[in-house]
Image (tube, rainbow, N blue to C red):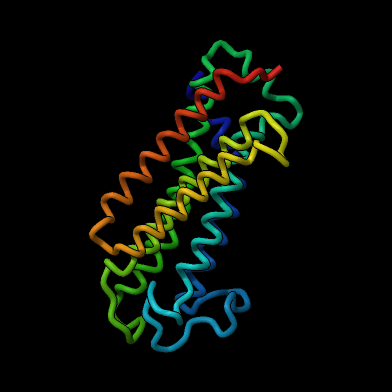
Length: 228
């Protein structure tokens, strides 16, 4: 049964993941100066721009925006996708616990997001580390802001998942988990930026704690909600 659930979620998640991955790779190609489409940011890569850092390299800001959009799309899809056509009535009456069903959704969503969002960072980083591709210095530590965004968007995914799963009015309390997740993420990032590297471990621990709390809330909501 678990294998069938994994396959179902993978099959249904694949189109969103493919579109998100394509958009993220386009951002990386643009930053490298190889975009097949018209420039995303008027003029493409500027000569002398340092990869991952500086005003002239906008990879991190575009990456964050698209990775956040992918996380939102996956989160809401995994919470709401089965309600279209009332497929949830069939799914939730299978001989398997609700926690197992929604834990499977979480595994597919989290792994899918992490793999898709990691690809453009690795592609851009490998290009930047290759001699002769650009005239500016590069160290892998310069990719830290991008990896921070990559990890932070997990909180947005979980907030969207919980908002989609819980009952309530959309114009009301239903979006409260997503708003709370975004607010907590912004506060933690502001704390890290103001303090610098000394608090990076505290930042990661608090972010992981927030993600764990959201996962527990998702599984509890799945158990308690009346899906009739």
